[in-house]
Amino acid sequence: MRAGICDMVAVARLINATLVIPELDKRSFWQDTSNFSDVFDEEHFISSLANDVKVIKKLPKEMETATRSVKQFRSWSGMDYYQEEIARMWNDFQIIRAAKSDSRLANNNLPPDIQKLRCRALYEALRFSPQIEAMGKLLVERMRSYGPYIALHLRYEKDMLAFSGCTHGLSQAEADELTTIREHTAYWKVKEIDSKEQRAKGYCPLTPKEVGMFLTSLGYPSTTPIYIAAGEIYGGDSRMVDLLSRFPLLMSKEKLASVEELEPFTRHASQMAALDYIVSVESDVFIPSYSGNMARAVEGHRRFLGHRKTISPDRKALVHLFDRVERGTLKEGKGLYDRIIEIHKKRQGSPRKRKGPISGTRGMERFRSEEAFYVNPLPDCLCRKESPSINTSYSSR
Image (cartoon, rainbow, N blue to C red; front, side, top):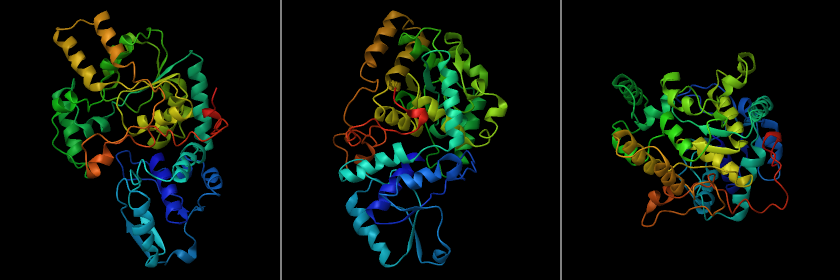
């Protein structure tokens, strides 16, 4: 959501358009009815971009009958596509509605002013709504009362497992339920998935049990406070037993705040995710169990704020080792721990340039293989001489 909105800000600049405040997706798996102003600070967004792009809350009445077109912009497109093919549409239409906003703009080879605009849009203009900011700050303060903490993005919810087809460690009934969900979700295109193959390739989220082994291997003591940034874990408390036995200080929104404090947000998945986003960005260490959209966005934000420590698990290597432990051909202990530490020495968010495409790839696959702009917004966001002032809960320390 954040990346798509900010890409559309840059596109509006490229085609000299006025941007109407985006409508958020209300038809996704989560069925969230939130509007833009429920999740983000609308007034701040408009005023912060005033010198770059004109942003309005809704179409003026005199434009209601204007000629319009719904257009699905081509994925990972550059300046020429927008300033030539899309800009020509102004000859026939007064309103262009973007059918999709995800991955519509190239990661690289754009003018510096456009890349810097993406940075300003994402890290300065797109601030969460005041009520979300206040609650997020409160959660961070309460988490900090336990000491330095890890934010663990434990992507082990029903929708993730159904979408990815990952069923390792689940019962047959649970696997069947996930398959049924995938088959009946129209906008998930891939229906037939080999779970074992997915896992072997590192395409599955780590299970809570595997995450516990991973954290132990990295040397974190059992007293480490851990914030679980997630929705409802599939399988409930029974799925968390192994992780909880290793790390008893597992906290969450629901444990840190009262029912009354969370009540304004609980029926809105996007707003609950925004709270997790804030606590994750502010954590001492961020660890995602899966490299999904939120995990990548948090990683990029933490890079922007000064390369805060983010440990990205090598899932392909880890499941190979964990399977050996499960089969009894490798013991959990110093040998395993040393191997895992060695594998992750260079996967901790240290400064580096954005990764380009994988060698040998062509066409759309070449763009798809690039590291996304919002995962590593450097060096494009390095132009500032003063510390970026984003909002209270994100201030650098």
